[in-house]
Every structure is written in structure tokens, then in C-alpha cells.
Amino acid sequence: MRDGVEADIHRNYIKVGDIIKIKNGMDIPVDGVMIHGSGVQCDESAMTGESIHLIKENTEKCFQRKDEHEADMKGGDKDHHDVPSSVLLSGTQI
Image: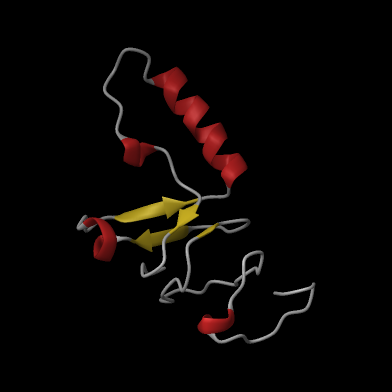
């Protein structure tokens, strides 16, 4: 979406500030942040080598989950995969 209008744009012409609608099975064309979504999981194995699918949430939800996780895990082992991320990396797949 650019200037409030939904349009098909070739990945070579995506600009900073464009909003991209992601769909299941889609390769992420550029680095970005998830604004809104539900049940989104990302395969980042091309970037990280890890074969697990990572949960993606919007930034507000991520901070909320982080605070909840830290309150639950006082003094315990923390796993960075327990808290979702809003960051979508170019070259990964939904």
C-alpha cells in the first residue's frame, strides 16, 4: 500500500514506508516490521540455520509478551524464542 492506495508493485520498486500485505508461503521481499497480523509464523532457516518456525506479532504485542515472560521467568532460564518478534527479514518465508 502506498499513499493509502493498494496496488501491485514489483519488489524492485518497494520504498521505505510502503506497507506490504503478506500471505502464507510468500517470500519476504524486504526487511520490515509487522504492523498487524494473526497466527503469523516465519521460516528464517535461510538466514539463521534454525529449522523452527518463529512466531511474529506486532510490536505492541511483542513488548507485552516480553514483560509477561520476564515476570514469569525471574531467576530462571530464558529462551529468546519464547518472546515473539515483529521483525520480518528479507529472504525468509511466511
